[in-house]
Image (cartoon, rainbow, N blue to C red; front, side):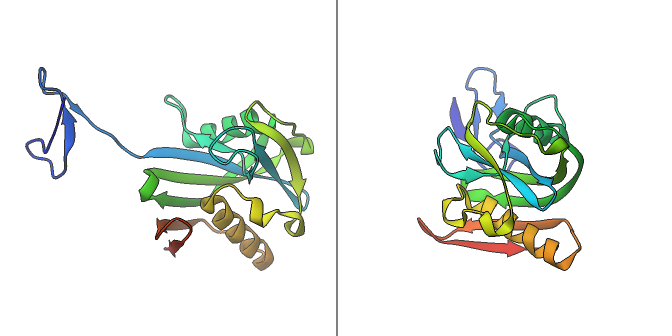
Amino acid sequence: MNLVVPEGDNRQRYVCTDCETIHYENPKIVTGCIAEWKDRILLCKRAIEPRYGLWTLPAGFMENQETNLQGAARETAEEANAEVDNMKLFCVFSIAHIDQVYTMYRGDLVAGQASPGIESLEVALLSEDEIPWKEIAFQVISETLKLYYQDKKRGDFVTHYGDIIKQDDNAYIVNYF
């Protein structure tokens, strides 16, 4: 395996020295959901690394043979034993420094029922003033929640797009489109 720029390409790729097969490495898609119940949303406390013990929305890597929407529903079921209906795309964030694209949906939490899945220590239905902002696991989740509550106050939910750009260990720039 060699790292070379294949003919007709513009960046280095791993290419098999025997069969010349190009092995592409592409960003991972993370998908999840803001599960709403009355005036509350579902958060999960992580039981896995990275960010063990911190809070997040139910989300994870999309699997092969599933749609983005199916992945968001599956992750919500896996992490919070919860079912969601009426899901609509809420935001898309590109995070180039970790090679990920996040797609987050809004949906109705069926019957307000949730319990910790295998990847969660606990789950909670929280109102805006109960969100543990300093204990949110990832910058992208903080940004998603901020947009959610801005839209909710305005009474109009729209789809948001943006980039999260890492500046140093603790600083990020968020560009919205």
